[in-house]
Amino acid sequence: MSFIKWRVWSLIVLGTFAVGRRESFSVLNDGTSFIHNVRDYGAKGDGKANDSVAIAHAIQAAADSAGGEVVFPPGIYVTGTLELRSNLTLNLEPGSVLQGSKDLADYGSTEAFGFGHVYGVNSTGEGFKVGILVGRNIENVSIVGRGVIDGSADSFFDFSKPHYSMDFDPKYTRQGQDFMRAVLRTEDGPVDMKPEGRPGTMIICSNCRNVLMRDVTLRNAPNWTVHFNNTEHAVVSGIHIHNNLLLPNNDGFDCFGCKDVHFSDCGIQTGDDDFAILNSTDVTVANCSLTSRSSGIRVESTRNSTFENLVIHANRGIGIYGRGLGLTEHLIFTGLSIDTQLSTGHWWGKGEPIYIATAKPISSGESGRVRNVKFANISGDSESSIVLYGSPEAPIQDISFDNVQFIVRATRKDVNDAVGGNFDLRWTSTKLENAVFKHNIPGLYGRYFDGLSIRDFRIQWGANTSPNFSNAIECEDFKRLDIDGFEGSQAPDSERNEAISMRRGSEVSIRNSVAEPGTRVFLSAQQISGERVFTGNDLSRAQQAFEDDAGGFRLYGNYLPKRVAK
Image (tube, rainbow, N blue to C red; front, side):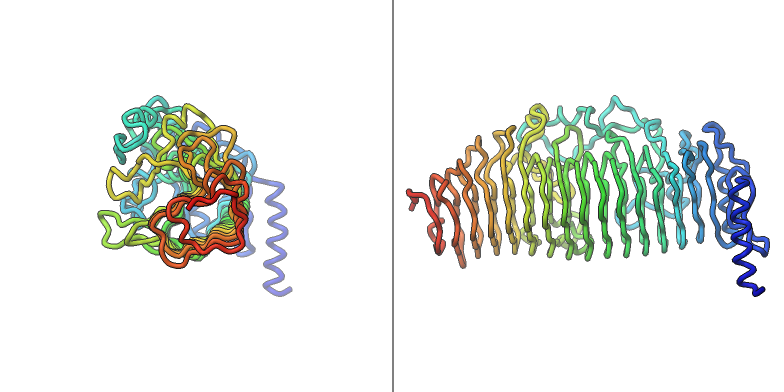
């Protein structure tokens, strides 16, 4: 018998033997162990004893044999920080829980593991600790199984105290000083840490290659849940994250400086962002259900990535930011259902289903840039505007909406009264007066963009509305706007009369659009220059077609109301 056949036969026989005896090692015919049961290294799995040393010994044994599988049978294994190694698989069997210690002394420091506090460069999570699993400069690592990794987050927070900072000035908000009262409410979170602090990111893969995460449940993270940092070739499938919605900074997946990373078939519930993707390329997210008090998807300085077949329940559905850290371009979002609701507390966002913002931060020498982003086949309910808010030095470029429909409504009247009717530009704001500020709420708002295509786009107003709701589409300070197949009207209780309002723009085309019943004025245009085309539109149900200087448009084949303002 050849050596290869003998080796395969040995694996089959010994693997079968291991199934019958969990306490035994499976070994290759040369005597090298490749399956390591943590109980054989002294782990108790009783939910009381600290099993860190025993688990670390099992991981080290696998590393010493050039790789292998560390198995967790049913039980609760309390642990502090563990370091992962190359060619390693952690297999959490059904009924097993890897439980984060409730003693901060059991966790390593960020400094000891080579991390710092420069965002997007060497930081991971908030604070000065790491979490349960840390992999650095390794390859071929897997975390699989039907078990659970639990971060014990609730032990580190005071649920009676709000978590907030003064990154805004309430005097610029619609509510004035009353806005601050809503920030200090705790029923929607975020709540504050206990004075002693909290553990760091629950799972870190930094400078890693060939990472697999499959089927494991991750819950109760006290900080970021999973951080891929400068990692290539990662696949994440069937992961469920159940974090406390009241806790700050417990992101689902943070993907920084990564390439070729793919997420699918996950269910994620977090207080903070479900996905935060920075300075990465070739990232895909598909077939996931996302719930967040912050953003379902947050993207910055990322290229050539797609997001498809997602269900998002969040404060802010999609957030795309440009603030001088790199170019964001060639992103596709398709097949999404988005439901957004306003929240009290210090969460960023004010109910926007889609949000893109660029700015030149005070600390940066250049402006952030966002261009070539496509949104298609998206629908849902929202409590605020689709917001495209560029800057004069960095206009948002070449954005398209194709078959996008939203119902804009108010859900909780008390929350809408407390925080609604504001735009929230934190993270890209340049000063406190434009961090959170009073603004009416149209269905879509765009300012400082160059190239916006809106096709088969519909805005409806829900049964419960707010007096802050205004136009269906409002655009200012722009170039190149193409609207083809829009349906809508102004909000029914709005002080604004126009379905579409535009100011200080150039090169506009409005085609094949329909004024819905109740439309007072279909189009208001002020200081619009360049080519202006208005063709094939049905305004028969509008009281009035145009006001201000909209008469400068070339009109072809429109069905106009009987009375047309000059």
